[in-house]
Length: 151
Image 1: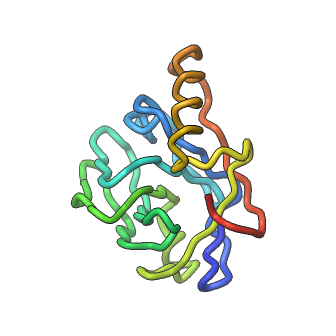
Image 2: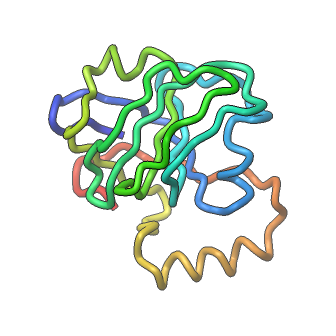
């Protein structure tokens, strides 16, 4: 995940949570992410930290990958407001927002490893059909950092 505006790298191991269960689970039973890791929730307009044991930096992005709201250091038990213009939420280790200088208005880009663009309805529907046939606890997909367009 790249911040194209600032020329900084937010992470190279960003998990993709694009199913109801994976978004709901989030970091509930996962270890604290380390620098370079994170999770992109698709779609997502609000995040809660109920049951999460550690703080996270949370960025909300619109469909174009532009940062529309930031929540650095969101603590356990906390929650964000509903961000109406958001399509995605990016959860990162605490300190990532500060270290990378990421701010509202910055443009982020990423490329899914499997090439599926979450906002394309026909591909999202196909992915949902495949997901139903998998176990709910299967590992989430990962995103790779490549130069080029965001999904």
